[in-house]
Structures are given as C-alpha cells and as structure tokens.
Length: 547
Image (tube, rainbow, N blue to C red; front, side, top):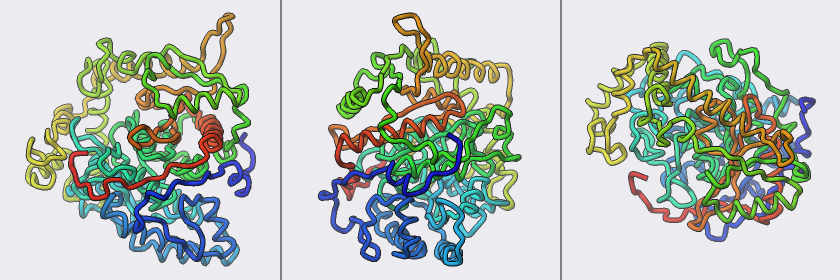
C-alpha cells in the first residue's frame, strides 16, 4: 500500500465523524461558526474543502485559532507562545492557492509544536524553562522545516512538562514555570499527562486541528489517551530529532496528534524523513511508504484480522468502553488473542518494580536515559547561537539561583516537591558510556524487542501453528524502551468522564500497519458508539497544583 495518495474525498469518507455531545459545554467556550460554517472537531480534509471552495481562507482560520487560544488558554494553559508571524504566513499560503499552487494536505493548516522543538523565528524554544529564555537557535528543527515546506503554519509553541519530565520523578504533569499548569479539558482537575501535555490538550480543545510532540517514554501516547485524541509515536529514527531538546538518542522520537487517525497520519507524512544530522534516520533498515494516508481503512478490513491483548496480566481492569469495543471487533470478524506478556517491569527488572530509577543499574532504562541526557542536552546547548546557559550544570545552577520560579530546592514549589534530583543524577553521570550503560541498553532492548513485542506478535495456536498478529495492545513502556511505533485512539469515557484510549503496537517501521488498523477500529467505534465524546470543561475554575 505505497502507491499514490488517496483523494481527500476518499479520506473524508473513510474518516467519518459521528455526532458530538456538546450540550454540557459552557456557552462561552463553544466553537463559534466561521462564515456560517460549523468548526467543531473540524478535520484537515474538511478545512481543505472549505479553502478550495473559498468558504473561508486559511488566514481566516488562522485568526480563528488565535482567537480560540485567546479565549481558552487562560483556563487550559496549553500554549506557551503564539507566532506573531502566523497571519502573514497564512496570507502567503492563501496567495499561493489563489495562484493555483498547493503544497499538499497540510497547506494552510495551523500546527502547534511542543516547546522543546526549535523554531528559527520570532518565538522562543525553552522546554518550558526560564533558563532558556533568550536563547537563539541556529536553524529550525528538521521536522519544523519539513512542516513549513508542506505548507503548515507554525501557530505557536505548546506547553509541556518542563524539560520533558526529566527533572524529577515527583512533579505536576503538564507544568512548566514558563507556561504554567496545562489542564485536561474534560475535567480541569484531572491530569493532562505529559510531557507533551499542551500538544494533546490543544487538539482536544479545538485550539488547533493537529499538533506535534515528542516522546521518550509515554510522552505522546499518555497525553493523547488522557485527552481523547489520536497520537502516533513512530519508530526511533523515523523522524529526525535534530533541533529537538533531547533526553535519550535511543528512545526519543517526534510524533503527531490529531482528532482522527487520518489527521495524525497527515502530519506524520510531513515530519517523517531521513536527515543527515540524525544518524538514526539513515540506517539501512529504515522503511517509509509514500504516504500513510494510503493506509487509512474502514471497519470492513477487520474481518479476519488478529489482535493480541495480554488480558489477564495487563488488562485485568479494562473499562466498559474496552469491553464494548472488543465485542464489536469480534462481531466485525476480528479475532482477539490473549497473549501471555508480562508487564514491562517484570520483563526488564527481575524484581518486577518500575525501573525508571529504582531498577538494577545494568538493567535499567534510567541508566541509559541519564547518560544520553547529559550528552544530548550539553550538545544542544553548546550549538545555540546565543544562550544564558551552556551546559546542564548551568541549568542546575540557574534553577537554584532562581528557586522562586524554578523550584530547585525541595519543598518550596508545589509542582516540584523534590526539587530537581534527576538533574543531579544526570550531572553526576558525566555522560560516561561505561559497561553498565551498554549492559542496560542491551538488556532493555532485548527484553522489549526480541523477547517482548516481536515475540508477542507471533503466537502458537491450539493446533500448533505459528500465527502472526496484525497488531498488539500492551503497556506503552514496551514501545518506548524498544524504540518501536505505537498509536492510541479514543474509545469513549470512563466512569469519571475521562477519556479512554486503545493503544496498538507494531514492530520497528510498522507505522503503516498501525495507521491501517487504528483507522479501521476508529471507524468501527464511530459506527458503534454513534457519537464522539468531546471535552466538557468540567471544574473550569480549577487552579490546583500539582495535578
């Protein structure tokens, strides 16, 4: 399925939108019409249709999104900064369209990008930290250049958990000193998850149709699921990390957010690509089709498909939404196979405990991440044209000297009750890739790749035959430590009115399969549920920190 791109009418037909439930949304937060056109939950395909029919221009829609941010951001704090050049860029793209030229599906589409992704423009790239305010990047991040070339409008920088949740194990998710506390639009008291909190919330709350985030471990899939959106975290090396403030070269990746699989896939099409400045993107085994939009599918494709779920081990408390969906998938002809896959803690750590910090050093994800982070962050800071900080040691000292805003000292800032202990551990590592580091990297990769996802994608049937699964639904930490792709789609709300997401994994470079099956299940769910649960903005005045 790597041929020519499907037409947008085809994508629209395969990505049908069910009616939404909006009666409970406060009046002042509802989506006003634009030139008499309904804008709620609008998709990229619908926007392109309106642009082509001149119902409104991308300048009109960009102004609409900026106004939406102005109204909602004081409550949600999902956007750190908007682009003062956005309307001028939109006007240029409108002129191109009027002259008969469009660059592709993202032409004139506003996109928010996470604040750890560099933009060479009037905006700052700070990872949510005051320490980086005033820094000047040498050039756009590679994925930003690709978005601009595709005709996307970089509307602004999305808020995030400061330094991508790297400072401490105990912190308020979605909080950054520069951007404030990002809030879940379904219930503002509930966690938005992180670290790509603002990207997920902005899409969920209809501030923008799509956004870009980064993930080391769960930072795309967690927020997408918690905020009722679609998230795609691709294989490490599928998207360049050049110009991205890093954590781990072995696990970091840039991915997409949308309200539909098609929209998230359209962004992935734009940002994926080999880059000489990121060696992981030029490995011989790398695979990328012409377009992931060609994989968008309907629920008819589910007949005969096989999906693996470790129901007894990892899904003991599945929600009613999951049970409803699984029953519908079976009626559609899909087979759901129970796979015997231990939790990632059991797989990577013999004590069965979460190993981000507490595992055995030679078997711990944290051993790898802290060494990679020291080297990666220092390299990023050293390459800035101008910066008030030039090393992670400088950042640590800046936080101490500015404790009132950065909360370096334990017990002084509620969002960071422990201060910055992980920063101290990273500095202490000095970035040394010793035997323990290499042992830990080999261990977590073998346990999550060969002995984890790859093993689970094949199973032996009762008649002794080896059967290949089409996709796997396991804990998202597996995909993170393996460096493998994962996506999540919304499948309703839990008893507390918080979104439930279904995650699907594949082996390396299996993004096309994930788009295919996620869109087929999305189509099935839309048919079965009959509506889409949109944010209700409950507890609108909530200002609790931590969240």
